[in-house]
Amino acid sequence: MRTTLTIDDDLAGILQRKARELDKPFKEVVNKALRKGLAESLTETKREIMVRPHDFGASRAGLDLDRLNQLVDELEVEDYLRKAAKDDSARH
Image (tube, rainbow, N blue to C red; front, side, top):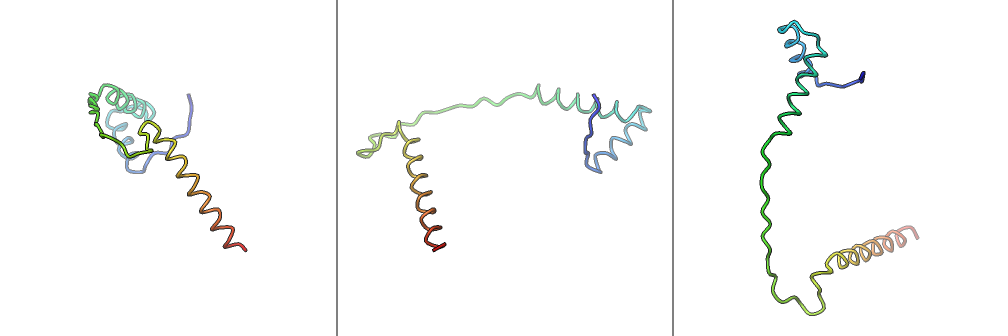
């Protein structure tokens, strides 16, 4: 596949020198470097993520911890309405 790729000047210089050293076409050196880099990134060991639950204890009256997303949505709406009212008052 033919494509246009913008390579940083320092990296292009390294690739060009490597192509000359190996007496290989620039395209071949770039493709080999990309393949090697992608293969390494796929084989990197993945860190195990440990999720530790936390008991928040008794919640405040009227606050349902299972509905925090709804609370966030309501606060965002209030903030939006406050800013819109402020913008309206500034225009008039």
